[in-house]
Image (cartoon, rainbow, N blue to C red; front, top):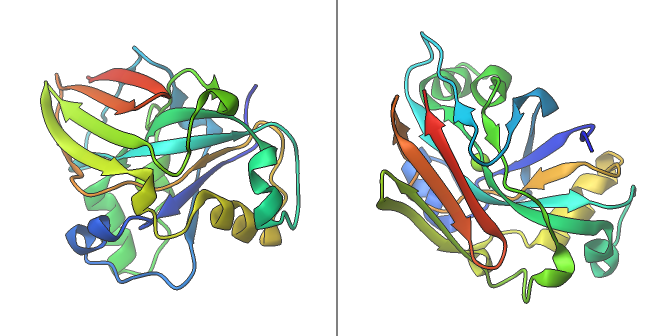
Length: 206
Ligand code: MG
């Protein structure tokens, strides 16, 4: 099912703040990626000229099984039908330039193939969504390590917060932020993102 939107959360792990010169957010930082950026396991991440540094960001993705507005925290997980591994590919130089100029960073996050996502698994198969190990490796070297227990805003808080402002529609995806260790990808790299009990996502950069 094609989502109406991919809702992304920025700076949701304390350890990731310093490496991007960000301050502790008082409320979740929300942005979008377009559905046209989605690719699957085994597909190629395609770089284009003039974008500068491309970075990886392993994230837990939520997939919504029903629509909701003003969702209560206590109720929020009942809206999530599946989870998946997501890699929030970012043209970092473009994003940094946009941030410094006070401009939106849509293009830096929204290019074609910048949204690799693993095959979704039912949320019922996940033991504890608040205690999942995330790991990302490039060419076999582990670059990112984290656990969903380290989120600044919990999954429930994120859903309640975003749905105050916009309807979350059935099929929508929410990428919940990345832990520390983001770094560059270059042509030929093979990037593997994993979340325990959720799956594995392998993509090559071309
Ligand atoms: Mg991200």
